[in-house]
Image 1 (cartoon, rainbow, N blue to C red):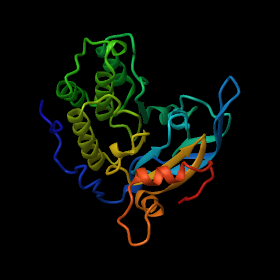
Image 2: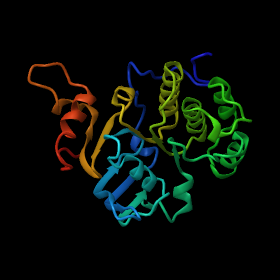
Image 3: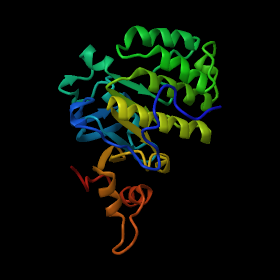
Image 4: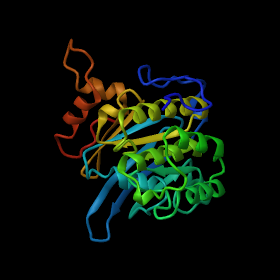
Amino acid sequence: MTTSSPSTPASASLSSGPTREGNAADDGLSIAFSDVGYRHRWGNWALHNITHTFRPGTITGLLGRNGSGKSTLLDLAAGMRRPTRGSVSASRLNAVEDSAARSSICLLGTRRGLLERAPVKDSLALWEATRPHWNRQDAEQYLDLFEVSVKSVPARLSQGQRSALDAVFALACHCPVLLLDEIQLGMDAVVRRTFWNALLDLYVRDRPTIIISSHEVDDIEDLVEDVVVLQQGGLVAAASADELRATATAPDAPLASLTDALVDMTSTGPTASTAH
């Protein structure tokens, strides 16, 4: 298996992080949460009092422990759920009610977004028909790169194969907003590194707004520019990655990791401690 992304220059790498070109504020879409709460049908609140705007044209890490509300927040951002209170908008378009907003947002990961019991070729046809920026050539090349057959059925794939399939759709959709929910789960080291580097190449070219959720912080440590931390459905912190690292760094010590910062911030209750 080769490890270079198809038809893309090696313009960025995990070792160097994203390289911004031009004014990223002119690219992608902002995703704004205004006093958002979400309560499950059985009565538990998954999110409460979330007010934050994800900057356009920026890679944001959405961090928190399992059950902290990350997947629910991404569902709301994609318009797949309606908030119990408050509002979610994509550059002022309602994420639930506006079809233009929904077609501009792609959510992948944790077995969402594809036709689970139909061959992959059916999901490819659906996305080509409904995603205005879909690139068939990219999809075909990434399917080959990640060794996924169009005849395979997503529900029957292993976790690693399913995640590789999600990666194909993430890289071929070219949506202004890309939401990735634990997309790296089960990937082997080669596929994971190939995907992250290809995602950086896409970011340099297209400047989408990318939000990546993960409880494995090391996977995205060198990828993200901004970080949002959730705990028990509340917003613990929202800042640049370096600002959060600094909060966990002792005087005269080397800059701490995001893992160190996450441990520090989630050892207390869901009180906003750092914000833009």
